[in-house]
Amino acid sequence: MYKQCKTAASSARQKEMADGLLRLMREHNYHDISVADICRELGISRNSFYRYFSDKDAMLQVLIDHVLLGLDLNAQKSHDLKPDNAQIRRVLQFWKSCEPLLDALSSNGLSTTLSMQALLLKHNSRALSDTFLIQDAQKQKYANAFAVGGILTLLISWHHNGFDLSIDEMEDLTRRMLTQPLFVRQNTQGQAPDFCFPL
Image (cartoon, rainbow, N blue to C red; front, side):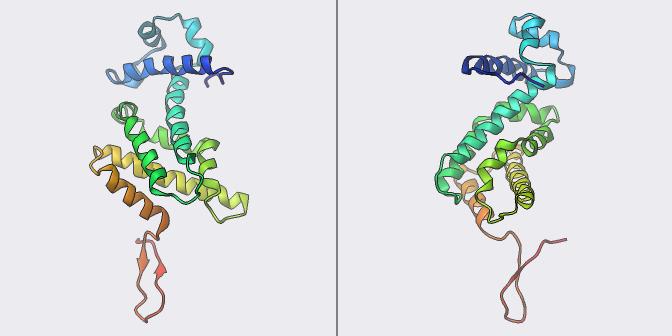
């Protein structure tokens, strides 16, 4: 667990320290990195480390939470609840700017940690909750989990494929996925199409 900072200065210091772990992860396997290695990289004492973090995993959590908070803030910048192109573009541009961390997570087999943390954090569902026409709070949390999981899977896949699609192409694809049925089966008897999931 990491310390919940009370001031902007201490939060910035915590993030700056966590960036030291990211530098190490880009050169070494995460599981081989020790707290002593982190302290040496940062030029700090173990006491200074433990003032902000309980362990190395807490430091990784800070890195991930900052990415997820950034995604959430970029998603909330639009007052329009519909996923417009400007809103989607901000999220995609922010995600691409996180490439160093995404590379480090991927090379260390930790991409699923990002997804799991997103599903646990309440702030990630906040930007989505008002977009669902589901009034039941218990059902809405499942809709939020579906949306967060789906969007993050899309973004993680885009990174894993080397950002092979342009931001314009991803913007169009994401907007269509958020606003149109993913799978439609045409009814052969001339009736309206119905939704289906391929098995």
